Image 1 (spheres, rainbow, N blue to C red):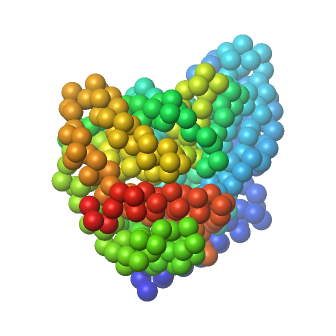
Image 2 (cartoon, helix red, strand yellow; image 1 turned 90 degrees about the vertical axis):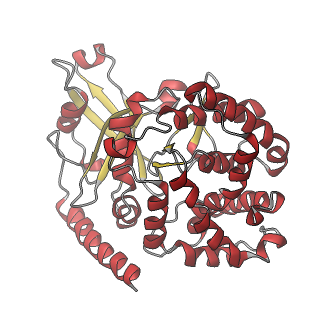
Image 3 (spheres, rainbow, N blue to C red; image 1 turned 45 degrees about the vertical axis):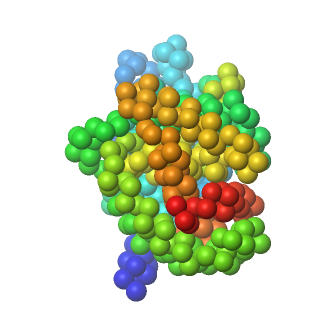
Length: 390
């Protein structure tokens, strides 16, 4: 009841604000403004946030083009500059993520993921040596839950191709993904000051528990088992009552072992491939502190077909351990790591049961065929690896 009441009150507050914005159509003019939608962006605001380090540069025009919608709405900005801006090579095509609607603010604003992504791009991204988008500006309004990120248009800058569940992930692509994760996880691994320096960066156990309470993940996981029963292996369906307790038990790892950065949502749809063949990772809204096996388990079970996963998972884990050791001088034990890989699959699954079945106050986050494919891959891995007995 408490969860439902808090969610409903947040929806009422956000609904009133969005209704006001649609009537008043406020515009962003100054650097500190947070545009409520991409259509509130003005040339003056873009001049303030894009040209502040380029003397004399001015944005002369901006054209807003819709792209796609999910937990955020995505738009492309085509930006024109005066001669100084053009000469400086300022970005002419920008990819935006924003929260203009009630449902996107409920999941991105109310749940705090937009603020986390903003902080990632402004505070942590500049330190990482991985393939990931650059961010030109990011802003978040705690009062209205509005947010906007101005990101590198990877298609324009690197001829990127974005992946989905139909992408044929080759062995070379899978190895490159593993290398990206090892670099990400190793950068702050075991740093005792990580939580103090970035107080907004929640420990994974807390991140998951609070999110599960807000979104009713336990309840909707049970509903998702009914909705996806046709793709879930019989051995897992027969033990569905054990899935949530296993999910909660496996949180203990993140509090008992040294922590590092977790992307936390490394399904195949959040990966892209550059024209040069490098794998990159986007959508950083679920960032947390925790144990690396959570991301490794998620990426392997969600990105690979069951056949390729079965063939490659041990060799990919061995590769990860080698790359992680190069980064940290710490070499995890293979057998223990493989056990934890099995245990963490349930957390990958929880990201997709809540995607298939969720509160009507939340948006449809993914197409149904994508969601069903993810649930099938993960539950198949659970059956193959006896995850519930791990």
